[in-house]
Image 1 (cartoon, helix red, strand yellow):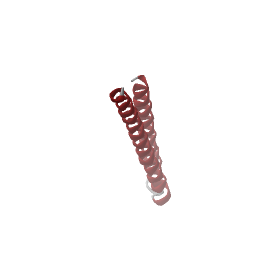
Image 2 (cartoon, rainbow, N blue to C red):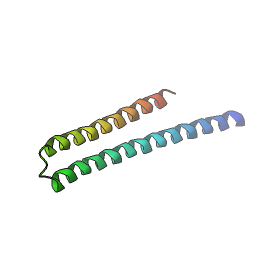
Image 3 (cartoon, rainbow, N blue to C red):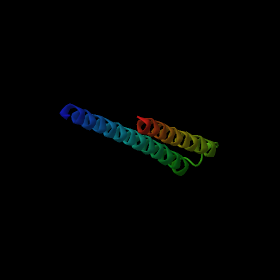
Image 4 (cartoon, rainbow, N blue to C red):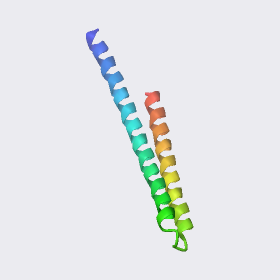
Length: 85
């Protein structure tokens, strides 16, 4: 009886650790995407004289959006996988 209860507690804690790790990973993706967005704004603000700066701005912002989408996709994929177990 005690062994089964201990096993359930270990499984529950293991699942909670996995969920917390997934949340930390999502937050790091969000933080990185925000840094990329800020870098794009920096480019526009401090280098407006370059001829193709707006295209570079769009490319850098696109990279930030893609990174954000990858982070959310990974988070929801692993969350669904953890819920099925």
